[in-house]
Image (cartoon, rainbow, N blue to C red; front, side, top):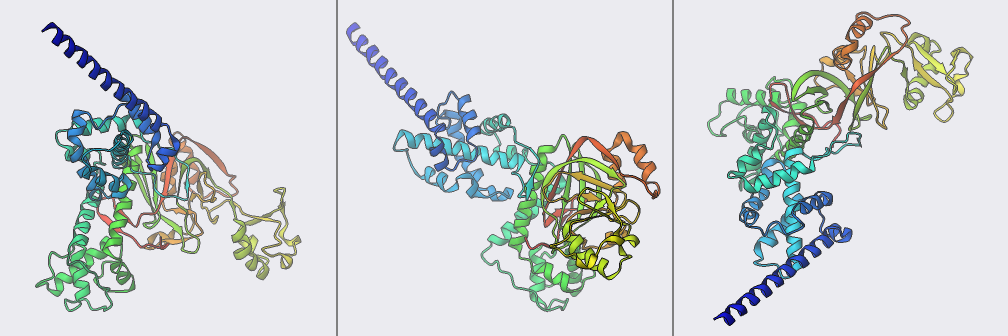
Length: 512
């Protein structure tokens, strides 16, 4: 009996040693692969640094083979498969690889086991990151550093595994605003509409606003303005059309003019994609929820400033026309200039001003322009032979002096970017009354610049009021540094919202 027990003990020790040795070998292989640049690149992982941090916290053992994660894995994969409901893209989360994994009973090799574990972790972490923080919007220049908290993402993964109601847990990660909820609900409606077997769209050609215009009737139904296409009266049709016109930021006159036809003929699929982009923007804004943030939306030609989740300032803008579009960017508003000079860009000086100067020598004086040489010295324009100058021979800088007729108005808001664009006041106030406000050379004209300046320069508020109460003559530029530089994002969202949380669609003016 003692002899048999000894054999069993020896056998158990042997098996334990084999298992321990295997686990150690697996950990060593996991570590080797985690820090193999070539391997990780081949697997197309979203964030290798995050994965290394995650597995270091797990003592570099396989995570999804442990009891709790293994039990949660199937449901978590199903949640990722439904990523489109959140305005996300399945392919971003190794959808094909996860599908193959789910079909396989058991990985063939240790490397296959490690790869399956790492790829699934990457998919879940990336999914949680996009849902919580969004990804950085596509911009022409990114000057904002807003990196998701990696430790929080790791905590969120563990909380997802432990959650008793994982759907509710994911919903709690999203922005809790009526604008976000309205956009998400509309996206879900559009996605359900598109996925229907009978879904199709016909272009609206006829301008008749009655029930005989079947493409119009069906499009209003697809947009949710009508509950049915059966037994609809002409009055109900006109009311639905007005509702859609308001949603598309058009004059709600119930008529099919060219603007309304163009807006209605944008496909539901394109509207759904616009909603996905906007939802990502709102999730990305969530990174700044405890700070201030300024958002310029180009298609709506509007500016919003948020402070600790609340909207604290809103104004209309004039943005770049199609030929000279406003670039998308992120940066920080760092200074405010009262009574700025306008240094005319070279292209405007040579293409637009030079022909006018050649035609009328008094143009410069009449419009308060100065001519500077390469040393910055002001010259007498009467001493210059303007007829000999051209775009290839123009050694001067044209600058407009300060004052009420200055193209920048009384206030300029500077933020670094490689395009030399900025926010500024304007003497042309009449343009703000228009629905379509795309008239500038790329800069953004602000309807209410004084309120924005007071918001940024709280301690100098009295000075701002004094200098802008009336237009002062011969006032030199005064520059104020913004004590807490304001993050600003100039973005392009054809789906956005108004202050009441209503989802609006805007013209794709730049054809993006």
